[in-house]
Picture 1 (cartoon, rainbow, N blue to C red):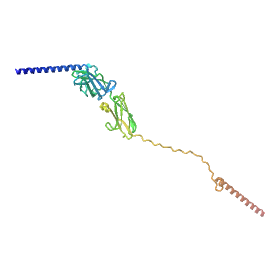
Picture 2 (tube, rainbow, N blue to C red; picture 1 turned 30 degrees about the vertical axis):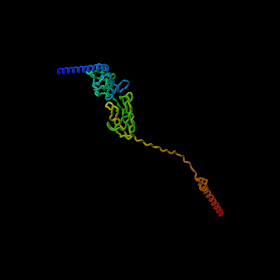
Picture 3 (spheres, rainbow, N blue to C red; picture 1 turned 135 degrees about the horizontal axis):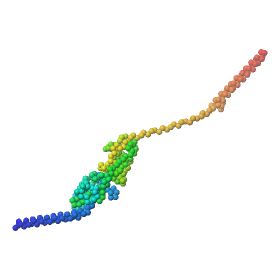
Picture 4 (cartoon, helix red, strand yellow; picture 1 turned 60 degrees about the vertical axis):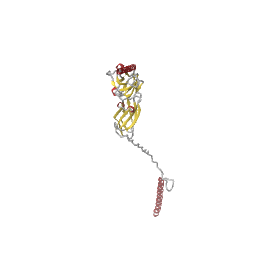
Length: 314
């Protein structure tokens, strides 16, 4: 009799546990079904303009969602170019695994994933949606991610002298993004000059770099990268981009020697030593005149004496 009561008790216990388990399962399914109706997903970062989101492979992105099951649930993330939510299904051939974050865990009814954009969904100019799948729900992002064109960098001029300025420009970078611009000795060598600039709202930038006056004359490389997203897509290297030459030696300035102007000589009278107020020419002429005059008088006297003596003899 005692054995029969134990068997009945065990049967009742099993029956009760079965009913309880069935109730829990039914309740869970009803709860899941209630939250499967309104799951929402959005890509919130990076914001390019208004609600538009875009970037390159490796760009930091944030994916948020609401309306999932109120219990922690594992979800799978995919990318797709199909805008029809009906194609956000596990067997859809257009789905590509979100390689940087293939799975995530919901917290309550919410989803938040901080990751980077995968390189298997980065065809330039293509528009992508994010598809989130769980065992009981699916959600297609309400906005898209546009894959940007590859970043570009240009250098002008490509040959400069020591101490000259080089202008580096670029396009297709993320808007308002900090960029490091360097001129380096070789592709991986140290920088001889660098600058930090920000891209504008269109993803363009301009940087001015002055070549050091003591830079070794050779060919240098130019490298630009985003320090907050130092990925291959956010780095651009131009090998052998700038040739630095010796600065020109300044030619010394020669001051011309003034040529003296010709002058007309002016005769200057030399004062006489005797008179003190006559010229040298006048003194000599006067002396000559007096000498000739004296000789003339002497000759006259000699002539008179000779005449007298000759008259007496007659």
